[in-house]
Length: 204
Image (tube, rainbow, N blue to C red):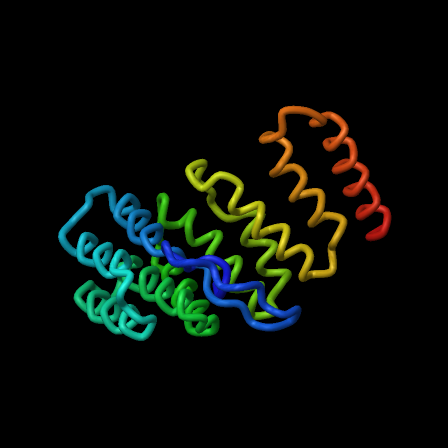
């Protein structure tokens, strides 16, 4: 994810220059908990993964090494392994490797809250890899979890902007913000609708 999705409790790095790769968006503590929930039963393996993510003293390369060791303990067809390892590479800024691992986790049938986390992390990674159309599709259509709030929409707005669809990006950002405003919601909904109409007219 770069500066996007795989941050797992770490401080978010400063904004990258336009066009530059951003550090991963996988956030320590989120991927692990989601994977446990997706399996339906917390286990000792997941607790050990959580402990790695929660250890703020570990450097990125150490996190990758420890998560790789834990992933190797699982059967080859367990989606939790590539999901967690993808998050580790994501947090370290290795977008290309993270993307491959996320795709493996999806192909193996990752589900539940972990799959919803992957919507955000993989969508952000795709954007950072320059695959903006795929990023928009993942963030628009991938599973979501209400516990993540407007996170998917925030990354969708970024993906739309990167894809050159600025009016739609701003409309998505406004729609995500409006429910949290005490006033002016009607006006802002109108402006968001105007932005979408202008985008549709431009596409037509």
